[in-house]
Amino acid sequence: MLHLQLPTDPRWAALAREDLHTLLVDHAWCEHKAASNAMSLVVRHPGLTDLVEELTRIAAEEISHFGMVVERIRERGWVLGPERKDSYVNELLTFVRKDGSSEERLVDRLLFSAMIEARSCERFKMLSETAADEGLREFYRELMVSEAGHYATFIGLARKHGGRTDVDARWKQFLEFEARVVAGYGKSAEMHG
Image (cartoon, rainbow, N blue to C red; front, top):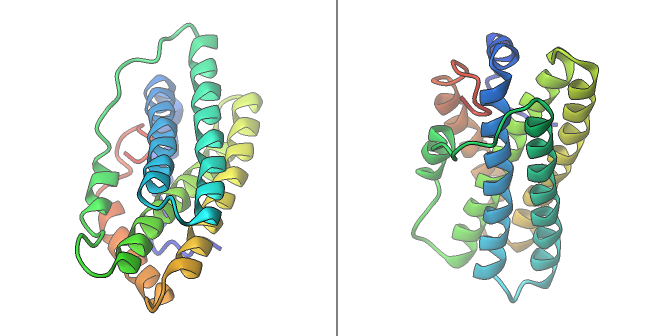
């Protein structure tokens, strides 16, 4: 379903298991950024009612996930800690068109969002299979399903609002670019590390 061209190295899951604090703190901030990203798309495209409704729902889910991850941090006696730069996301952002038609720019922002959801979904699946305790495995199974839904929503909105943009061809380009980017990651316990 996700069509990722380069799977995450399984050693990433071992790093995440060994440094759960880093993973959870980074994950919490990723959820916060995902909510902010959805709302920034709403602000930029207030006339697209279906997009506004879908992305408002996603933003609410993402901020709820932020709270759930913070709760898991607190349960372990840890604190949230500062937000960290997400180099993976910043590299993906360089592929997003800054010029072209409004439809092309919207498609790129939606596909950028879909890509992050797809990679997160894949990593949540890994965590649902490898986390040290059953509660955390179940938590990540639930989030995996949610992220898959978000991924499908972003792709669907890109297809609906893409105008003359060949969304499938552009998605293929995103997949190819992301495979090159993610090849340099998987070496730290951060969500996209």
